[in-house]
Image: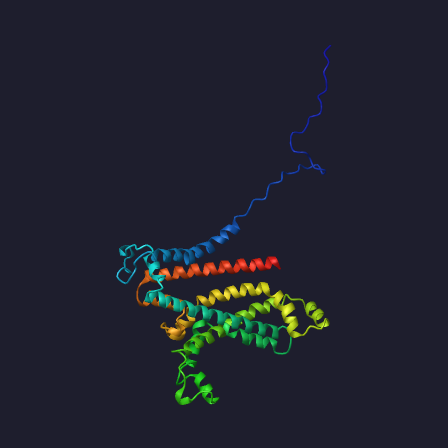
Amino acid sequence: MATTTAPGPVRPTGPPAAAGGTAQPKRRRPRRSRLPYLLLVPALVLELGIHVVPMLVGVWMSLLELTRFHIRDWSTAPFVGLANYQVTFDFDSATGKDLVHSFWVTILYTVVSVGISCLLGLAAAVFLQRPFRGRALLRTLFLTPYALPVYTAVITWSFMFQRDTGLVNHVLGQANLVDPNDAPFWLIGGNSFWSLLLVSVWRSWPFAFLCLMAGLQNVPNELYEAAAIDGAGFWRRLRSVTLPLLRPVNQVLVLVLFLWTFNDFNTPYVLFGGAAPREADLISIHIYQNSFVTWNFGLGSAMSVALLLFLLVVTALYLIVTNRRRDHA
């Protein structure tokens, strides 16, 4: 007699059931979104079109004898290699001497302008640190030069510096500081440098004030209270509390103001009408004269590349020194 055995229990082949009796789905790895990279594409394209490509074109122009005779068709401009750089760095020639003079004028202009702007910005930021009636109005007034368009502001200053009808000589004459019949010239001669410096400081110090005022917001009041309890006066608190805590802000501020002021073209161009006096011949105007007035774009491009390399070296050295000081501190 044949015997049959009952079949055993069938084992499930699918995924194990959860406690509630339902199958638990497999976990998928989160896919990286491409949206952030897509959003960066317009910025990268603009960066290439506005900065990188013109910079490379400028380097190529510096290797050509690109004068007025070849500006219509660049393909006819002969390749001269480093000849334009040899003319630029030939400090015994008239071109080299003029470039050196313009360089030292720009150095003096930048150092004095940045130094005064930082001092005025720090003084205003410390003065407006504590709340008082009318502080918001003063902040608005202090930031007005920075908010005005550069051309509007500098054109206004150029009218004020006029010898016969300008406001500056009128005020000085009313104060008996100058003779109205022998008023000084402010836009030519030796006074042109100081006029340019005054306009630069007037435009730059509100930016320093804005940055330092933002940095002071992160300084705890408890530090000032503790210093006051220890008997520290205003200057001691400024030297031991305010300035050390503002060091990171000052490092960035000085670098940004240095680069902006050294490369400043709009202020002297608008103030002097494109032909700055020798006493105020900044290197930006000097390169403009060699490029668009004498129509020697190859030589002007070589000067521009040399200026770019100088600023890169100065920036790198500045960052190395400040980072070492920060690490040491």
